[in-house]
Image (cartoon, rainbow, N blue to C red):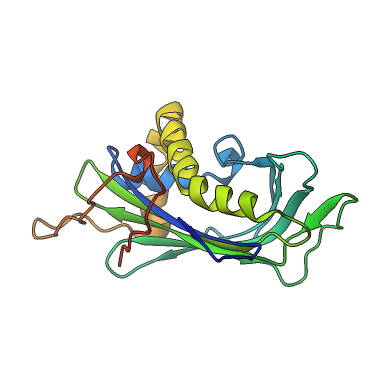
Length: 212
């Protein structure tokens, strides 16, 4: 993770290898009804609209981890983008005309965007990458921006791992996902994705890791 100095902008990125099939990990990320328990700082996560099997309109509220700093919220467009090589990119960004009124004492975030990448490593392992670019807005001390940027990728990827182990019913979802995403079978000639270090196990400041 990294930050821009003297700024309320959070920029961070992390990547981790999971001992589950591509279809199983995609199912965990796809289940928007179960995102609130494992996404850090998230106190509310609601699906406002299901536009298609690929597109959702989401409301998120983030609980401030420190006193004197207000909660934040955002209304997001979220889209799953299947790639020709079989990977799935999940893109999210602030909705231009939020259909949710701003709440008193809560700062509405005008910039909150990023992406997930779900990539097949082999038949039993999957690489997931998370990247975020956001501006908190309002008053936030620089040390808090630095703290969130440094710790958020680790917490997100750990939360995803906990959810992966918690939800056995995801095992029935890949059949549905295989149909809507047209997930290709793994070729015997497919090259594994290089993962130098599992970012979750790095207690030092996590470093950005390029995936593509």
